[in-house]
Amino acid sequence: MDNKQQPKIAILMATYNGQRFLSEQLDSFTQQTSTNWRLIASDDKSKDNTIDILKTYQNAWGSDKLEIRQGPSKGYCHNFLSMACDPSIKADYYAFSDQDDVWYPEKLQVAIDYLATQDPTIPTVYCGRTTYVTEDLKMIGQSPLFIYPRRFRNALVQSIAGGNTMVFNPAAKALLEATGNLNVVSHDWWLYIIVMATGGKVTYDPNPYIYYRQHPDALIGGNTSLAAIAERFIMAISGRFKQWNDINISALQQCRHLLTDNAIEILDLFLRLRNSHLLHRYRMIEVCGLYRQTRRGTISLMIAAMLKKV
Image (cartoon, rainbow, N blue to C red; front, side):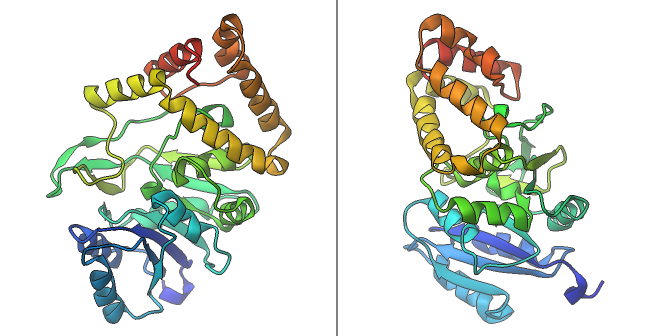
């Protein structure tokens, strides 16, 4: 297929001090079987050679293929949302990208093949698993396989996929533009939440199409080790998870007018029961229908609810 006949994809990449691995990620873009893409790189005042690397590729590709922007310098979440909420960025599909991954050649094509089969009027997100690798790209495992349905009842209490796997349609982009660059925990979790809360669709691919580096500088790493599981449990009962819920709930309240009636009902129940008496908190998970994608995760959610930490 001629490049101009392929769907146009806007890749949204947030960068900050990414010189170590950035070139490998950029090179993996050039290997994509879907070639009609454009990269927007928003940099949060990197102190290393990130900008120089981006400019080198911009000189090679052309400014129509790679646009370099100055980010808001408020952290990675706001950096990503500054692009996703920008109405001047227009394409047939949109993909988030981290600065230190490596994409499989078919990564974009698989996502847009799926999205092309969906109703374009419904906000729709494709996401999925990743392949965990060392700094030198040696495979060490895969991210969890989540099989339960994607629903608002899940999104409210769990982020199921990294933004580095997410590709979404213009209806989902318009939804982010409508909500704006709100204060939320993370851009990928927020996209899952707001799409589910407004009657959209999220599909989770069990097949990975990204090499996801696990290294000390990574903002968010893998979560399958016993140490990571223990850390999440401690985080839940320590109150960190409650703080995250407070932030996301506040954002949902600010765009309440966009939510479905069912989502509003679940949200209001959650608000009422999470601060109620012990017996009501115990029943909160059942009454609201909240769940996580693993049995262990749902149990930790119940314990956190009992301790008034949700």
